[in-house]
Length: 89
Image 1 (cartoon, one colour):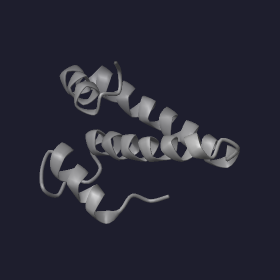
Image 2 (cartoon, one colour):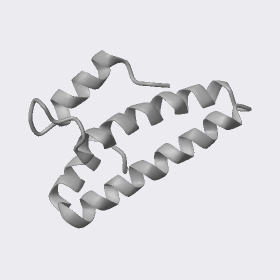
Image 3 (cartoon, helix red, strand yellow):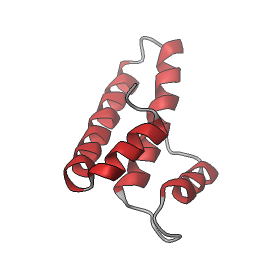
């Protein structure tokens, strides 16, 4: 399920490094986090939707890889992303 255009533009403004930034890890992580939150709510109501659960696991692992990339290359932005998105408690 794709993200709505206005939500994606808002995430770009909030997490992007410039106006034309569309593919930085920060934006990708923010978009994936939004999709994960939406899909998690869907799965609370539809517990037997196993194909969506598989998609959720793929998104979580992709976000984990992007966070690992940030952690190794730019640790301060990694910590900032964790706090802004409240991924880790």
